[in-house]
Image (cartoon, rainbow, N blue to C red; front, side, top):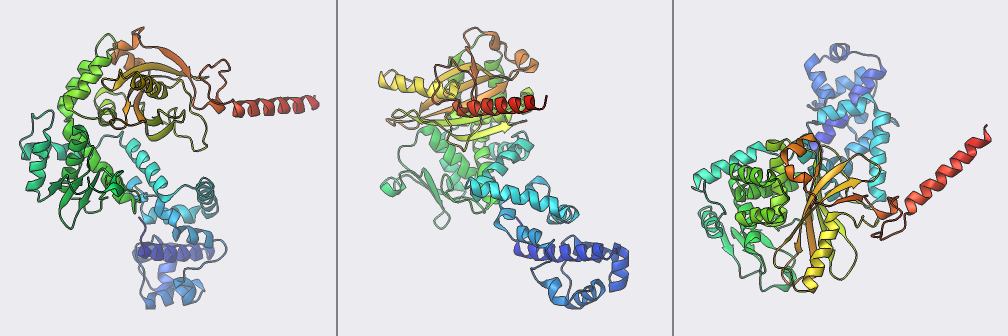
Length: 494
């Protein structure tokens, strides 16, 4: 986050650097002429220091400009676009410091190739406006990139969970007992209230709320035991990690800063790591994935043994598989649908190592109905209509992406969003099939796992005999017409 003071120092340094370069002065020459030390001039240009009035007068005289120009937030035609960017909301929508970029390094980037950098960032800004991307969208994208940068494994949080379990004598407690978590929170001076939210219809969509004024975690009605345990564990994470910048609702509707979103992620990571402790979970995952045959029951048993939701378990697998099984080429998707419509939406995603297919599409295109994520939702709907659903549905398929060499083992768990709800959800873990995965998961060769040719969206898909198609291949058709036109034009040159 670039503060107002950072911006003022950056803009001042940018002007000094630009004027020095225009006059062909070295750092040393400017320092000597202005009567300043070499290190002080360097700190000014890199945005680390803002000089006092007498030194600004000396710099202005040496650089041939007046005092007011140097201290104003306006610049010449070349610098003004960069100054506008430094002062823009866009610049603060990206958490530069979490990716190792300091204000000083940004200044160097801007000033070394100002035209190209300004054009590039302006292009991003125009794209953001065209697609109505909010600051929160930038934060979410940045968070996903941050997870990818660390292979979605955070050793400091894993160690904090270890200290927490040791401090509260929970080393061997699996599954975690909710009453124990509640007692721990009370010892942290946090009360749990299950009554006050339950009677307020306006809060039906909010699962929990933490009141800092009352030191109370309010839990809403209708939560499963697994959901309650997650919320209790997450609050324990906020308290134990001593995060003051945090959301207070279950899901923050308006993320005021990347720091808040990041701390929310870390507390949620703490929660799933507490509910599925690393050493225990590694052993159990090893037992499940080393089986020679595909067994949906084994995955369901794993889920039940920790008393967690499907999404928690799939998220935990994205922490553990890259770190401990060298399975790093993976994606996680949460897809929401409904019994009443044929509309599906990706509501959460994570891609490690590359941008795998499928991925969220902002163009309102129809997602490929051959994905196991969508097929599982449809299967759940059928089971609900026939009143045969007894547990979350675990399914798998090998997805081969059209006109690529990429094949993924996709494991999906689907269920209703809540009891007696028409809203359905599936969470899917996609693992790129390579030699390591074939060695690690012998069940990949089980003929019970179906193989399907898939694509991202119907509009972009060239599988013309697809019986599951939900929309015409308009984009493919348009591309074919363009190709024929270009071939015809080339014929004219022969």
